[in-house]
Image (cartoon, rainbow, N blue to C red; front, side, top):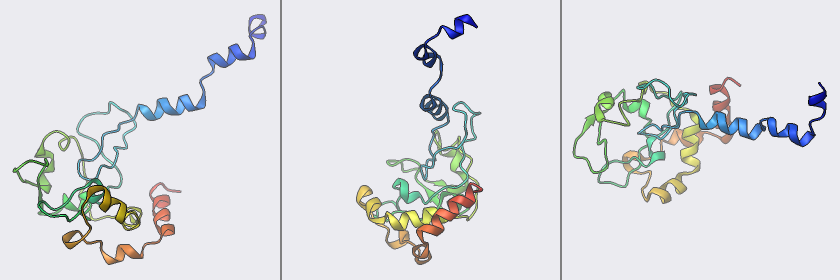
Length: 174
């Protein structure tokens, strides 16, 4: 006890881990791999989780990541979860001539093979609102447009910011 009481406050602070350091250590040791279609970040909390199981609870429209219909300026409004349930096809690499059926996306090579994208038609309202709210910035950034087959559905434009936030609250059980 005598030794402990003789330690200065400054000396004791050296041994204490600061909250910001704890947060940085925890966040940096997570998986940061992004979905090859929509760039959603894997939610596995271990950076070295078992292979072949990157996933996220909700994907987003792939136009957020610059996906567009080839040889056009039409950004995609499709969610990758809907795409992998469809009979559609995609080019896995920008300069590729190989076309892969979305249902077989895991055969498209590294970056695709280690993702588990659940085929469904769910669309988190937050991401539909996000596309509408940041349409111009996304179009300017990618030098592409949400038009033609990539036109933003009219029902997306009815989603309010409050409804978008509420959808996040529901997703996280708040």
